[in-house]
Every structure is written in C-alpha cells, then in structure tokens.
Length: 437
Figure 1 (cartoon, helix red, strand yellow):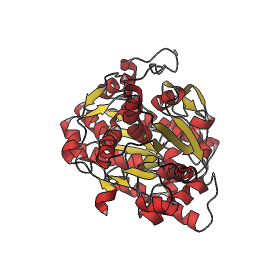
Figure 2 (figure 1 turned 120 degrees about the vertical axis):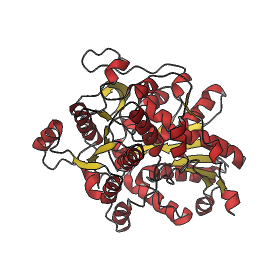
Figure 3 (figure 1 turned 180 degrees about the vertical axis):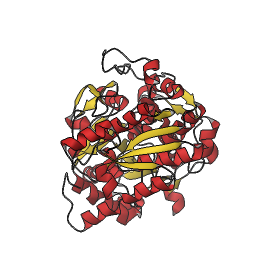
Figure 4 (figure 1 turned 135 degrees about the vertical axis):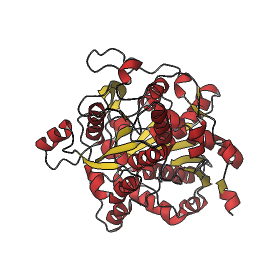
C-alpha cells in the first residue's frame, strides 16, 4: 500500500541550485525604496543589517544560484522530503480528485523554515558574523534559526511575538535547547519595545513589532546581522527546493497537478512550492491553477492594498511594494501565529498582480475543522498554518465530487502541529472562536 501513496527521491536528487523566479517574470519587480529618500535602495544600504553575500542574492536576477556543499550536507539530514498521496482523505470526502501533499514537517525543527535558516546561517558565518537577531511568530522560524546557528557556531537572539510566547511554550524551549536567547515581544530590551509597552502594557505583539525590535538589536550590537524567515526574495529563493523536488516526485507518481495550494502569511512556504511551478506556467505554458490561502482575520492578498509599505511597525525597513493591511495593523490573536503578518512577500504580491495566482481566505474555526479531519484520516497532525491550505484542498475536492471532475490537487504541508496541541485543545473543547486565541 505504501508504494501506492508515497513517492521518494534519493539524496542525490536534492536540488543542486535554488530557483530564482525574478529571472522569468514578464514584468520586473518594483525595487525596494529607501524610507527617507524614497529612491531605490542600493546593496550598500542593505549591508547595514544583512551580509553582502545575502544582499547579492536578494537583488539577483540569475535564474539558478548554486547551493553550497556545506548547506547541501545539512539539507541531507531531512531532504528530500516525501510526497504523499492522501488516499484516506480522498475516501472520506468520496471525491474522484487525487490529493497529494509535500510534507516539510520531517525537518529537525518540524517545518519548512530550515530550508532558509541553514543557508542564512552559513552565509553569515563565512561573512564573519558572530550573532544573528531575528523575530518569530509561532516559533517555527525562531527554532529553525536557533538550530542553524548552533550548527554553524553563531549566537542567536529571538524576539517572539508575545501571544505565541505565552501560548506555545514548547517552541520557546526548542529554541533554548538549541542555544538561543528568547524574548517575548514587545520587550523592555529595545527602545521601540518600551514605547509599545508604554502605549499598551498588555500589547499581544505582532510580527511587525518583533521585526522592529530585532532590527534595533542588530544595529546596536557589533558583529550582529539580522535574519528574516519570510517575505524577502532570498528567503523565497531558498525555499524553492520544495517545488523542485515536488515536480520530480509528481513525475514519479505519473501525474501532473491541476491545482497547487499553499498557505500564506509572509509567503515563503507558498513561494517554495509554487514558484518552480510558476516557471513551468510561464515558460512551458502549463495550465496550473495556483492558490494562496490566508487567514480571514489577517488577509493581505484578499483584503489589503498593493502599495509601498514598511515591513515593520517602527518604519525601519525599506519600503516594499506588496499587498498590505498597513504596517500599524494589529492582527487578532489567532493560533496560526506564522500567518499573523500585515504584508505579503513582494514576489508573491507581484505574481498575484500579474494574475498568475489566485487567493482565498478562511476563518479559524473552518481551518481547525479541516485540520482535525486530516489528522483523523491521514494520521499526521498539521500545524495551524498549513491547515489553511487543507481547508482549501477539501473544498476543491468536494467541488470535484459535485462536478464529477477528477482533478489532481497538490499542496504543501509545511509543518507538523505537535507543538500546537493547546490550539487543538481549544478547538476540541468547543472554545475556539474566529479571530481569537
């Protein structure tokens, strides 16, 4: 039976290079702007918080960027990740659709995030960085960067959004196990954190606030650089290993996806799966329908504006052209902490503007209903973030049943939910409300 539902590659088939969508876009990305002059930022401006080697990747338009061998050696701990067919979910839905998922929860940190934390730590190490500062929402990114910093001998400090710091204590402990220093954001450790606490002592925090604190920490500490887990071009680039592997694995399965689905917060795991397929859509004219799924209470693609905005609350970052709810937006305390971000990756925003992807939004209760059905059929307990994708997959499969269509659906299960069981407890006890923690 397992032979029919799992499609594996060998370690030799882990991608040799990252794919850069910027090389194939029919219209170039609008450049990031300096917050003061409103002129395009230069590489020299960005090296204040990022190492030069990652700045070059951020601004690159090369189609393929070789993956360094030390990074591939670490990738070999969990890559290639499996592609599985959700046969039991198909049966439960009585759908003629074939449902496949790329499972990124097998990484040491339990999510897709090490795909970029490992190269970011490596490039910082060879550039002479001693310490990395970052933010995290649900803790997937913070734990992944802590893991990578430990491997490459870097110190790591994480500003974790307070609502997640309190509700997801085991992610904090995972970071500390890997040697990171973790603070609940907003904190008393930065000027901006103090300002936010003065305005609201009970402030639950947001990714925008945590980013501001992490950047302030970076510029105040010599030998420190900033590391971001989503949104930026080089982060989406590193995640492209997901889609590259999925293309080969779908070929092993003898099928091609009609619909490709991923959850979106900042956009990195969606980009990782979707961008290699978008290349095929652009270059080979493949007729894929690609869908980004976001939380209804923090829906930048479906409710936001496409305009230049800051990536953080304190207005310290360059201005990015993206779908945004406004950098002052305070998201509700939903359990999908990794999706509580006001903006969307510029590359994801751009392909949405060009009509290459669609976007939908789901309320939290619907998402957990889908997550529990998936867990009870497939056995894996998904994180709240990819459960948004599962909700959309289920609706698509039901539509196939009602219309008698046998479509092939592919989605990215970007992380397990074993450290999110408090959220499941809230749902299973009947206490979960849309837009609340």
